[in-house]
Image 1: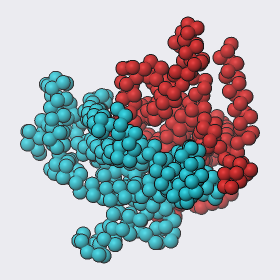
Image 2: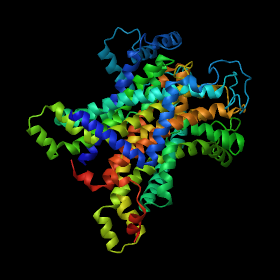
Image 3: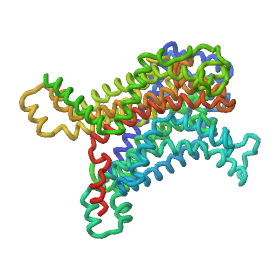
Image 4: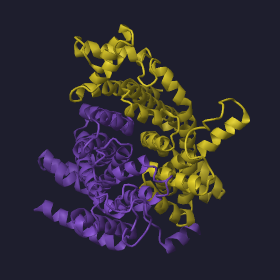
Length: 327
Length: 299
């Protein structure tokens, strides 16, 4: 359990670092750009909310930096993220909650699917060394990994939506449909999710394939795999129960480490498809100079990534006794 | 003298390796062509890339190889003129990221103790904070981020992955006999790090440079695509921005939007192919298996 405790400690340090970065960025900018934004708020919001915003962005306060910092930390930890400019006067947290389910659904599902499929393909490729999968997959996905995520999105819009007309071009659901929990609306949502999900899947899967293949190549050379062969175990059993299990562990850590990259790509995919998720909202907040919304979204994305990393650490600890026992 | 000789040896080995490895060969040829375009853009640009004087919105033709934009600019010339910025971003960000990774990763491993713990923690924290949202937040305040600001932000967010890898590798080398021998001879710390510790890690360092360069190309073009770069720059990302904002796909000008993406991918795959080849140098187990060895494995 010391391992879990250490990772929990790391989670807290990383969270604190993200909060701190969030606090200092607007203050480090030449001629604090938030100042102009404050003008748009004044007279419309109660003085308390104005003060909270002033603390968050370092405008017009006679407070020392340190006391502003701690007040900001307190505000954030209490979930007081400020007020959105675009959806005035809704609190930022309310605005974010509208986008969150869309991203969790789209990005969450396609990332996990990508990881599972990629890992399985990588294991098989390494197992049949020199086979079709092993010689085709790595070069193909090396090339694909060099394409910008959003461009794959543009290409699939052009090909599948515009040229073939199979899927809708934009959005998370048909604008004219009434959002209700019935079958046709759910199908409508799925119809809109196919292309963005496909884009995220195709661009993220290559990384998992390559790392799993590389881990697996090392593991297959281990003595206990030879032992398994010598015992006459079925190849399928050696592949998944012996080698695959152990090769998966570093890949799980890799999953945690590359999650940030995947999420970054997903932001642009949402933008290309005008998908009503967190990433699209972030870029819209940038466009509208809605700084409170923008910074809260950055925090939210960071927290989501950090939590996912922590969960994969816990999974590693459960799957690998060595991490549990070592300090 | 010994340093020069070891650099020469690495270069020679590199050349021999290029001849053998198809992936590395393809990667270097592409990179060489792109460098040529970067150095002499006017040789490859048939029309003025920013002139809005041609028939707008035409498709493929001999005078306009990739058609024109809806403003009446020549897409092919824009593509060639945009090469420079992407290549420079890749090389410069790659270079500075590598310098930082080497400095932080190897120092941490070599010094050890509390300093190592602190540097490793710092590296991990930078690594897990999602970079692209952070870059968006920073550039959102600046508006129209120019070249050097983009380089700074990309280096600031891009060094940690390499630092982590290099630290792990250096840790595994740290207590080897030949390093202890150098220390026992009374060599200075810088000598041990520079001449004994870093040369065996060359292939990993090069792989890190290529990885960081690839990251820089993709992140910079993404940033420019959403309009957070300088929208008047001559670059592939900016082309994509204008194409997207003028609905190039919907108005029957797919080449305008698709060509810059292919260009980014060409540069990106050159870097990725080289990276993959260097991975195989660093880890011989990953090299493609020969036919005879294969038979033995399956028998």
